[in-house]
Image (tube, rainbow, N blue to C red; front, side, top):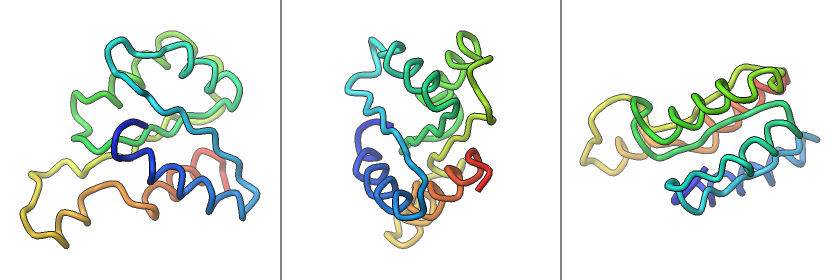
Length: 118
């Protein structure tokens, strides 16, 4: 995760801890250069990846991170990579609709539970 999704990821990690699901958060402080070592070390340790970004799913940073994980350390994965991003629709101007298309705790929790087979 990076930017505005970091607080979301930290909040969800605390909630999941109560359900005995431990999450490791990798905060990408920069996306160019991309800290591949931190990403690969985390995936190698946990054998899973859930990528959270507040961007469109097509051609975003999350897509690039997925590509690099699959290209370089695919055999370290025990589950498919999950992505939680903005819905693939134009960003609405209405505040309620905007919140509906952005990543939220429920979407992130569902993705984490899916990769943990929980």
